[in-house]
Length: 296
Picture 1 (spheres, rainbow, N blue to C red):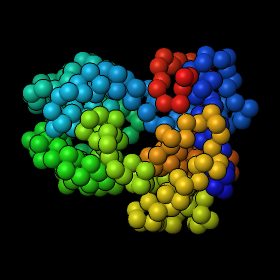
Picture 2: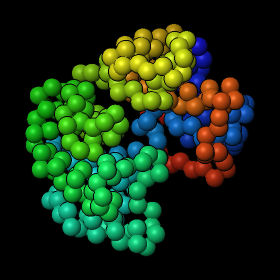
Picture 3: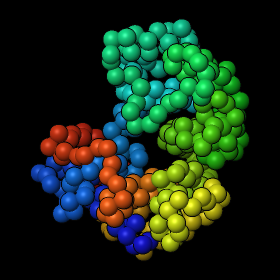
């Protein structure tokens, strides 16, 4: 099953390479890949992340680290390029303005919040715009310097992830804070993170993937520590199973965690355990720019 996991990475990255080289579809002989949508093994190659890097973080790489942290939080909490493009980067946070942009877009039925994941109100009985801005984002703005100090002192994705988990909207399973620290790994805030190849925050899908690979019941709960150790085992096998077209040096713990979730989705389809909501039409797809593992 370990080999199957790495074959998923091999095959999915080959599809990506065919796309950016503008080869005509279909890009795979596998009917599952041709019918259903799977994200790239490398999260940095996803469309929204590319936009964020090119239009959000890279142009502002010389800003104070706390400001970069907050703006990554703002981007991911809303999650759409349309909102970010209208709102703009924040040098001085104006909560009223941010709420007005959100409310205006929602009122006009414009795409605002991402559909890739769900932001709940955490039980707070207020409009979503107020909860997101006042309860989730404002405390991050106010504590940005403290969070920046954690990043600068530790140069650890895990330590900043833990620090962010103390704030409402960023804790729980740690999904949102994990998205942010991953973004920060490609900014001056955490581009020298010492634990890029030793730590990842395994979500439910990744844990199911680990259960499949290591022969456990799919619903068996596993602690983060055990999941992390097993992901490190998988990472240690990359030189054995990955093919030359995959940039092995870029395969880190996030790549393993991210791919485990998608591998689990693939296996569910293969084993007729269910099907994803999204089907894939390559003829409607388009991609302009990619940095990782692309054409040299």
